[in-house]
Image (cartoon, rainbow, N blue to C red; front, side, top):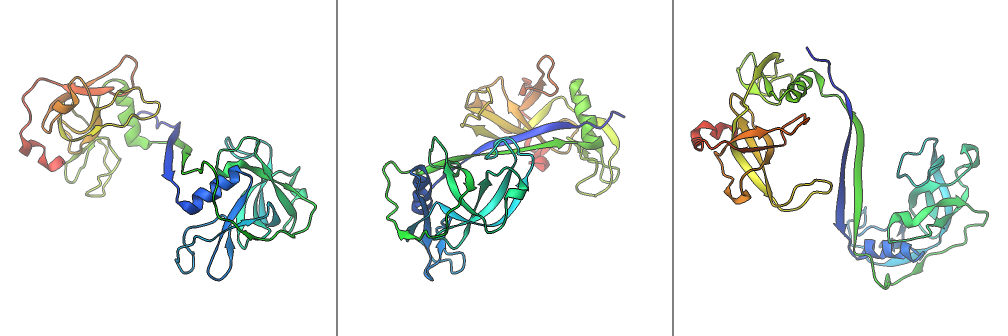
Length: 314
């Protein structure tokens, strides 16, 4: 039995969203060193601003400017900053009531140590040297010796060249341990073999194996070698090029029912024009030198499989 595998894994993608008038004004204001909130029907000023009242769900559009100074309401010390956090040296996460606002803004406070931070301390915004219209235009907060005299004032939210959209990179770093069943599956792939596991109750063969039958809920231990050929059950045509993926669009990703398996896996189809891929197409894996899994699947030249042969795997 191969040793269970474990390796660091990163899931990363950019999240792109358009901005409505309130968020657009807020982020554009940060670029111009101006902090805007939004006023609710009962007179409260919310910073950061939202487009709908969190209590009444009423649409909010009345923008108002607030001060760049404020008071810490609560805090937590961060002794080991992670990559891409606001500061590279230890800092405090703080909630700050900006003068003129009724809600708190979360950001970093640059302080020499936790002993220098306390609830009620006065702080002010330290602006980033280069600003683009993002929350990072506030580099951090820093201690401030002044009092709280700032008030909110109406603002029309109009700026030249407003920010209308943002791209937020989402990233998750973790260590993945696939477990006994999938470790055996990955180990077989490194030898250009594909193995699944058979359920002792319903006798279905699952690829990739999960260690248990999803239908019967019983453990699976009997290994079964499947494929390597299979049948395309369903597919999609990809027309948007993924970042850091050296594949020209359009290309096809498909669900493939390997011979002897009772669960379809997904893989890229190559060696055929994208508009000629079809349900029932018979395919086989193509391995690259040193690759630990098939690079793609290509047509075998066999006649297409009959629909009844794979309809239960759609």
